[in-house]
Length: 252
Image (tube, rainbow, N blue to C red):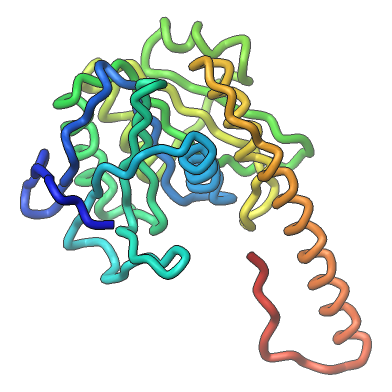
């Protein structure tokens, strides 16, 4: 996607954020970066599509992999920024994992930019690995007021750590006094987990008065589960025959 009129909102040589002028006033910013179960990425992409959000810019860094992302034949930047003025909402989504070594630089740049557009609050979406069943959403916040806001909608994450870029963003918000929440979709798998993403979207709907349907995500979850089950059965059948396959089909 080519922006005809852009401005460089943040540039420290290591991380650059280039966007169109943001139209929303005191927006809510949601960030979803890849992690456990790809919960943040899946939830953010689904919301962008369902709300028909406008692409307004990207985050670039010399530390990102040298790739461009293809979607239906069109080139996309791997870390993108979208806006929905009607709901006063900004979403930052990444198709690439952010390594621990650059998480601080990226989170610092992102929160700098968020302050420059006068965000009201930030919601960080990620996944959390659990052993039991169900798709709970765990929550944490940077202020007592924000914790009260989510208390009856999530299971409070009482003790532990939030790692990666999501943890860095929350820490940066705490240092700067920016109201922020972390929503962690519980998953039992490293595989993409649309059900966990759907649960997080349900909480966001309640918090911000949205009505994002998750029907497509549930259908996607059922398809992935069927394909994973078929893959597992194929592997078991191969083992029984004493054969060794060098390659397995991908799902997606």
